[in-house]
Length: 114
Image (cartoon, rainbow, N blue to C red; front, side):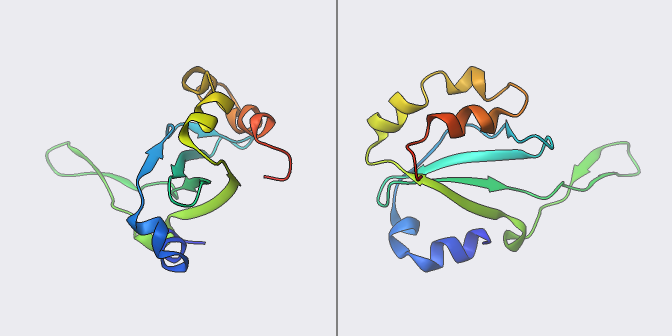
């Protein structure tokens, strides 16, 4: 679902504190994801942006296009009751995130059925 639909489905998400756990997670196809946790719902989710369009202006400066909100895809991958519990589950994430197909590392740590 897109990010706006994600928040519209549950207003508690919009009003809640969120904690980001990196934006360089990758899958086996080398797509990049951002990992976040919503305090009010306990939801751990991944967000992926489509590849941004990079152009060069007449002065040689590079410009990155802003993607519409509807192009930001969100997938809830689990629920974790507290920030402390999540931090315990994914201890070492900063280094692991930089490995190839780092989502495999992440999924191994999530509770079964998440």
